[in-house]
Image (cartoon, rainbow over all chains, first blue to last red; front, side, top):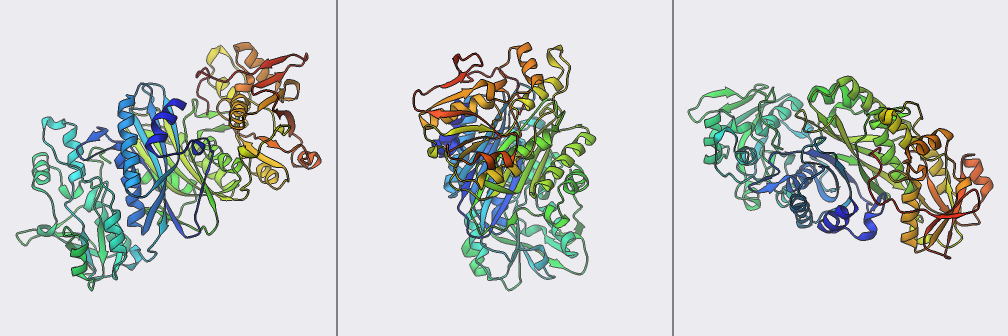
Length: 311
Length: 311
């Protein structure tokens, strides 16, 4: 265990020797901070565009970012099955260390439990993130009728990527996961007048985010299907298997709500992939999607666990 | 999952409904804070004196306390096997909520992953704790020759308790685990002149703590066997099975190092169970124990994983 920590995990996380032996680590905070925590398990551990380690770091950073905080510190817990290949662990912690470094985040505390064979499957990761609060105005309670709904890029890549990587359903193909930190784009959005709320559409995809917003605000949502960016490869996969791409997980996108007056030139300057996909309404309290043919469908809430675990 | 969180976990943790739906939670900190993280897995989940939930909360709080911080916030991650009895989960989260409340600690963020049967054994818990730094002087680098070594109560109760609860080795009996928060005693110790270092002797017991201190300070340690408090029931169990009670885990004790001038009247006022068990020396760089007959034995470092996982 010590060898594992000293030779593999600590170097990957840029931890100093005297830091490893501490029971608790001081944080330099004389400003408001935010905290978030999340557990990660994914099958397979490696997929095009990422791995469970990158997923854990990005997932935790993104939760802070969409909440209006700039991530600064991360703690990590591993539960590892005895006999888990050290080379795989190396890839995972290296990926975590690189992703953290790239996002100016320090991994400051960690713990590793190696468990007897069969008492855990492969590896599970729990991460806690702490960030400096930058924007304290973001809140579901800010959302009003006629506010606009945007997304920052194609939806569903992560979900489809992981399912394809399993080679389940007898299908082969490669879709790259969107697994990434949303730091640059979230930080730019936070600086804009009129930004009201952000959320990363992970488990349950756009559908879950929309229902959560509609319920919390007691408002309806109108989505425009032709404006929602979904890659052809993701569409084909979902059509073939009867999945709804709007329910597919993303791990590097933001859904955000803004006042109608938000400066759209600035938005397209932040990223050319930002598109408006709908708006808030008080005419009804459903999530409604306008089809390309001009029809209107209710987007049902994701009730059962129909999708395999992918984030 | 939602039902689990809303009906079982959130109530036990005193979480408000609007807190559950947040991606990240603000911390009110305008002072230096400490952070620690730890993963917990124990078999059996329930043992005399505690359970995995109490163990997780106390273990994390104690790491902050011996580091000189008063615990304030806790985040919790669960990895739960599908089909895990809800009644057991209820007992565990209730125990966690009560222990947190009793210690004035808020559980502010959490995440739960339910995993397919056989991909995790029962339940695993990862906790991250954040505390307000009270004493910034505690450090291994403060320790000098002739400093005194103390412990705050009988050693090894937790380790023996868990092993007996397994009814392994064909043995029956009940030893109550010492699993508890060391908040009251740590807080009192922190206020004393001459306190230099605290550590909770969990995995590896007193032996591991002594070797860690000796190595970090490049000093030797002299322990006095007759002064080390160990219950008769713990001694008998260890003798019977060939275990070394000094290697048995505690989950509610502190080993601390103090300047020889520390006020011993105040120490006994803090707890009548506090006893001096040895001292630091520059005569050698080993951990030596003086036997009741006046002999001297080297206390070997715990090299292999000879003990079953109990904390």
